[in-house]
Length: 219
Image (spheres, rainbow, N blue to C red):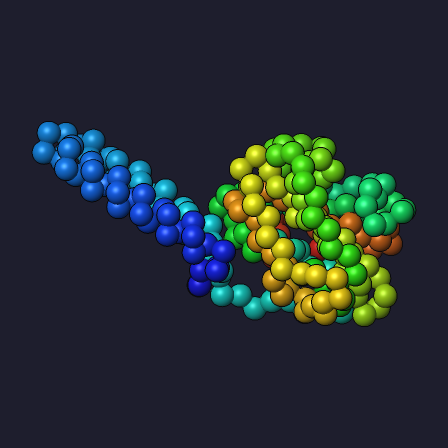
């Protein structure tokens, strides 16, 4: 396991706060209130471990398939429904949404190999990620990938109540590899996929997806 480069600043701040809080608490609490000191030490250590874990990159063997659309992130499948596309596409699509909890791996990955034909950042609100309007009203970053077979899939990295920073590494014209890094969301939220209506969906509501590994659909 390694740590993602997006975590450098956050982890450094967390370590500094951990040391500062516990040095001060040792000076003022250790002798008179040792139980409080140890409780504070435990709580701050757990919080530090959580911050570090947010930026972990597990060692994985990623799936590759020209007829396969992979999960763009780790998390729980919370939406599978037919929707009227509100961006780029002008027709109806199948939306698959994956909710990322603060405990999930937060790296976002390309669902297919191909060319990035659309890339757009949108300012917006910070509604909770499972809110029905979060896909269209929250801060988000949209990409459209055109696969070798000519079909296109849209992804939306969506911010939530806790996730206040979306990072996207792609630009229009980029040639990308399936399961390569698309971006990162701090700390959690969700990613939507918009697929053609004839896509063969391979997941169901409640499934736990693994980014770059779980087959969401075939086309």
